[in-house]
Image 1 (cartoon, rainbow, N blue to C red):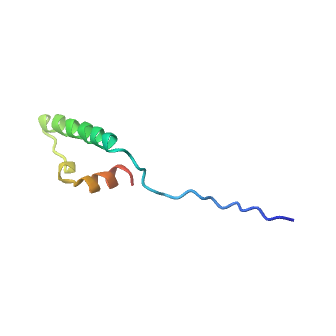
Image 2: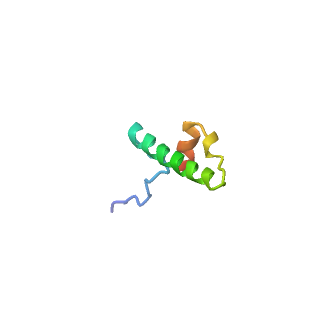
Length: 59
């Protein structure tokens, strides 16, 4: 009788994206922030470093 392992091997790891994808996402966020500032609502995302931004996008 053989034993079959049923443990899940999925780990919560950060997704690896290309620099182009990162820059496109950052550009969209900046545009969104710019629109919010024009409407009078400010955000703190502009204070994030690239690393903090990455962690915030992929918790």
